Image (cartoon, rainbow, N blue to C red; front, side, top):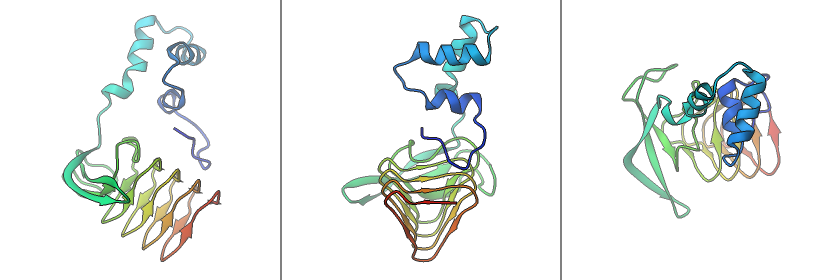
Length: 173
């Protein structure tokens, strides 16, 4: 996962998830730097954390088609921030679009698809759309009929509303 520009620190788990999947040794080396007294079993437990994590949402059977892609409505599996277990959210193409960590969420009829990512405490509301390789992270709030796409990034405490379009290599915070 690409790092949010607005983030000042990374947790061990976030750092582990940013590494390439081909690098068990690479992960182990970094974890060894961070935890030099860990045992081999400790490494395996840390490396398997992502597979065993408690998911905060699931993809439902309710779908829509956008630009030839199938998007799935999400449903919360636990309470966090202002979201309650069972709440229906917006639409994502897959679980790579919305992190299971922290308090990020896609609400209402909002959509996130392609290689776009929403994470940290970011919130996407209303009919907003985040797609292509866009990143929305930090404490960003995106609402209205906003479109964020291309390689654009919204981070920090940015608030993007109305009919705004953020695209190309634009970065807002």
